[in-house]
Length: 279
Image 1 (cartoon, rainbow, N blue to C red):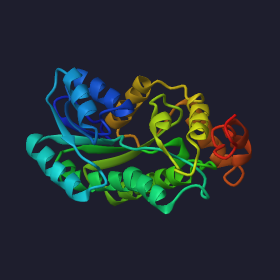
Image 2: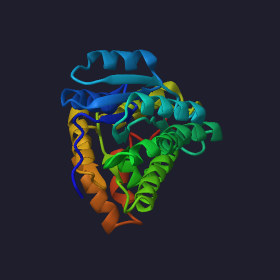
Image 3: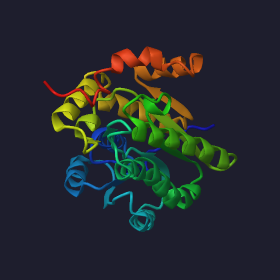
């Protein structure tokens, strides 16, 4: 499959106000890629856009849980950018807590953000992507779309579903000009776990302790992850691991699909402990 040339065309990025989404925007703008940046945080989105030069940039403040707003933004983006050939979905959040602690509302909120927001923006922009001679969709999944840890049920459910959506859509679009791939990052220092949500039933001090333990295991810098994601988009890669841990877990789940948790349990023990009272 021919590599994608992003220079001079437009890439749409969701979750562009923070973390990997913002770093991808900076990297692409420096290469002369026009950008349509989507996020719900208007102030942070404006700050990121103000840093960019060398390309045409539009910003779109959208709550991806609102389907009508997503489709309206897609119409706006398509009118402003006649040559869209890439979509990179970085928007997402996390949720700490075990099943006994989480409410159905909390779990549905995360699924709406991580999964249905991804599905909605992809569906809304697909006609524009189809109009390009060649286009690629890159969905950010997670290492937890390969292995499902205790204490992360809604996050793992949403990310496994993003993986399934990416694969099924890739099969649907086989033979067309649009290709689809998923990226599986592990341990990227974006702050998502520190700034994510946790079950209201968890004591704040306990949640902070668990989040800090998880964050301490992260080693990949967002800029490095962004470079890998851009490269995967240009190469129209189907499956991309980001970080040494992702590659190890990918292998582990292949060789021990029913018992990988025996290996993962110990290093994750502090990160999934949301029940032991804080000292």
